[in-house]
Amino acid sequence: MKKLRYIALYLLLLASPAGMVCAQEADTIAAPSAADTTLREEIAQDVAQAEVMAADSLVGEDGKEEGGVDVNELVFGHIGDSYEWHIASFGDTHISIPLPVIVHSSTGWHVFCSSKIAEGEEYEGLYIAKGGAYDGKIVERNAAGEEVRPFDISITKNVLGLFINSAVLLIIMMSCVRWYKKHPVEQGAPKGGVGMMEALILMIYDDVIKGCIGEDYKRYAPYLLTAFFFVLVNNLMGLIPIFPGGANVTGNIAITMVLALCTFVLTNVYGTKEYWKEIFWPEVPTWLKAPVPMMPLIEFFGIFTKPFALMIRLFANIMAGHAAILSLIAIIFITVKAGPVINGSMTVVAVLFGIFMDALEVLVAFIQAYVFTMLSAVFIGLSRVKGHESKK
Amino acid sequence: MGLLTPDPGLLFWMVIVFAVVFFVLAKYGFPVVIKMVEDRKAYIDESLKAARAANEQLASIKAESDKILAQAHEEQARILNEAAATRDRIIRDAEDRARTEGARLMEEMKRQVEVEKECAIRDIRRQVAVLSVGIAEKVLRSKLADEMQQEELIDHMLDDMLDSVKK
Image 1: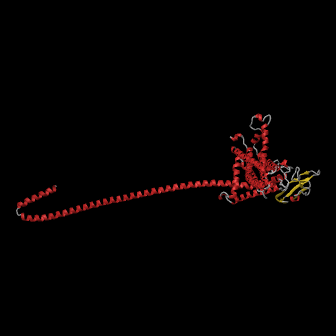
Image 2: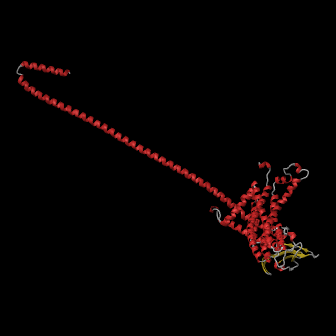
Image 3: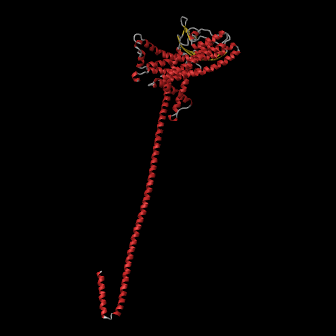
């Protein structure tokens, strides 16, 4: 446990300067880059807000310069979800992959191609909302003329990304498994890609799962290994800028929520008697729990805050990474108006920092997958505590 | 729709996709890899054990062969010694026998010589007696003219004979 604490501390330390450096970079880059103060403020605001994830407050704010690039839309358009997979735009021509829309509205099921509602058009009473509570989502109008969301299970960009990444994960794993099926034990350990996967699997299995859970780690190993590789593959695929990568899957709260819920369920469903006792009647001085159940209350909230922290940590890290890289790249386009010298030098700086951020994100992709798995394992391990008699 | 609000459609798909991925990997993916690794570990352990056993066996075989070799050496030395002893004994025996045989032959020889000598002496004595009788006859013929002398001689002779008988 002591070792784990050190690792957690180390990771924290590792993550905090990176975030700080990011913010500072953004500031220092922003400062000299802009010729006029409004533009400077704009960038600083954008980057800072992207870092802070003050997403809701950004809705409706206009980050658009005259004839310039709408950084807000660029960054949040990527971080958010969409009904089509935008690849590139040349002037007014947009190259994007239309995706199927599957909606159950008040008029029944609707399945159609997203290109039918691409440019704000209405199709079968459905259209993509602009502004309002459902900005960017498919809505319909009810009898009172208000915008309401139908039941929407469209294959959006993130869903398709999820499918592709899952397929990649399954293909990688199954090709490894096929190698094992083809080679008997006597032929020794695999080399190359399969060997790398084996090393990764064993690292998680031996160090994280066995180390954190203890006795009956075997029951939880499949879930934790799946979670690790799922998060890792999705993180790494998100870093590839063009199709089929680039979807911000693990930087979406719905994805991390499902993962955190799985950990939550596994933690609490298989919790031992001792685990529940430690929550509702912990070993603290009686006045802390008898008249006013202070500690039990805190412990009880702990049940929910732990997976909540898991959810937010992964989501925020990946989303912030995407936002930081995009903001850095956006600098190139913002400084176009500031003249060729500033634009040129800023391009060099932005590309350099972009490379740095990408390298950092590869590290973060692994670290976040590792941390998610390790903390899940720790939480599960804590829920498997045995009585104090058996500990001694 | 803010970033912090999970989208139900995505939630729906995520649950399905994650369930499928989890099912496939948990059933056909990781157990295979982990089982394989554990099998390999067991196999390596076993191989090491077998190798150690083989080594030990080899060592014991070597010791045994050394022992057998030493035994053979000992046997050889013993046989050689024995052979030498036998040889010595045979030689000694032969010598002994030769010596005794020689001695016996010598003895026999001596006895024969003795017998021969006796014979010769007896022969000589007979010859001498014959000769002496002849000579005595001749002497007597010449001397025994006188009666007295004859008587005297007879007496003398009788005495001699009596003496020799007495002896």
